[in-house]
Length: 225
Image (tube, rainbow, N blue to C red; front, side, top):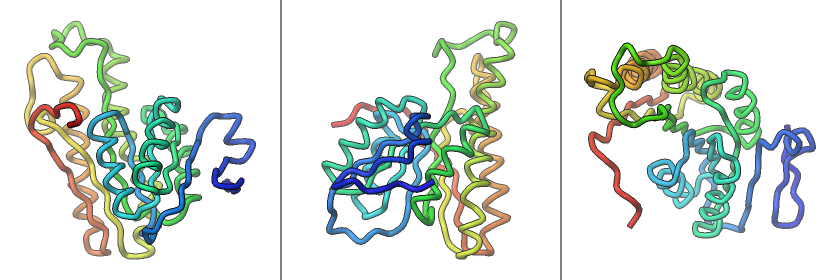
């Protein structure tokens, strides 16, 4: 799948356009491109800040999330402020087919130097849920987004990183990654699994030059200043 230039705006092929997968803005940049940074799970706080930082440092940035409309606004904002190449690509991290399809687009942009996996599942209620009241489909969704999605994303980029003997994969965790929290079984189990995955990948691929890390911000992130 190839993006074709039309003046200063790049548009996807007809297949991508009909599926609503990708939108990108390109503004001439004086920065030297360092490769592609793929940020999965971009919302208005941490994900957006991470994407903006990589764009500022000269990377071609692919931002991925479920809401393509909001994602496209983020892409326009970052591209305008940082004069960077920013792609918005829809992804559903609970569906491995969606992940693979989205990363066809990411990989078509070039070598993925950095993957940041910041996706997680937020149940309908953010309050503690009695264990007996947790729905099976909600529990499965949390595991799928937190661990299966990360697993499939990593599988898409690791072959290229191993071939070039370089690359970085960053998984974002939270307090629930470290200890069980009463009333949050579905969140904790997914985050425990993500932490285990990051440790396995780190130990398997560090010898070939691929850096894998699990990063926890043990607290609440405030609104942008």
